[in-house]
Image (cartoon, rainbow, N blue to C red; front, side, top):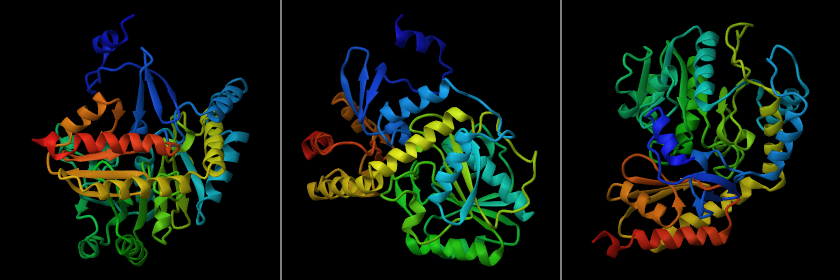
Length: 388
């Protein structure tokens, strides 16, 4: 079977296929069908924080698959209870959990919970924010390229400039159910929130009866140098939406709920596969690995090394280096696409964040020699000679 040809023949058409067939992964490396190694600085769009094919995730999946794979959440389960306990221990003030299967599903659930809890309908999000592609999450997503062709979207959504407290003060009104924000805007260009901004958002929501929802689908689970990015800001949101790396690569999503979220009743929402024992077992193993391998510290130290090294290079094509932990953006003076292709030619996989920004989301287990490999490649492709 020609894998590339078969996929192209049967694909839906909603993905741009790369001309590389990936069949195996280990740590921060991916391998194609010919055995060529690629340095993965995308981590599956931020999923593989623990690296690829972590042996403890594989072990947990194998053991649980032989016991019980699926179970609807109306029936309690040992794995679900254990993950609930382990997850909420990491988030003081957020002691209840709704499980689902993805980040978009988590954001959809949070939007519904906010409307049910407050009796209000308005959802306020930030310009450049990205919250998913399902209709409710898409309505909160700013970039028109994701929205075009799907209007009319869900009504009573509005957007304000990110990191603008004055705009936030004007926008949160008596019909605002929730303010939905990313602590670091990933897809929008890797823009960290300012501390004063998120603290103001938390204060204003409490004063005006709205709920603060943190979308940590990409920033959660050690990516920014803490277990969750909101912990950099000395706040506790009313809801925390997580997914991606929670189960070490297995599909999962969750909303953690604070005490201000009230009025949720049986049948109001649900998820057929949410809280299934297989994903729960993977989540337990993944959280254990994060703590045992101190991935938050690794992300903080490696991210500082990467950003400091990039800034010291003084690359003429780079307008700004910004980020938090191992979530790094290089804003270029030109479009990023040709440089992402140049990286791929050097067997390094990276992402864009908007038209002009290279986004780096490597597995947190990436080694320093691998980081140096990345730095050398970036220096080469972003040199003045390359641009001439």
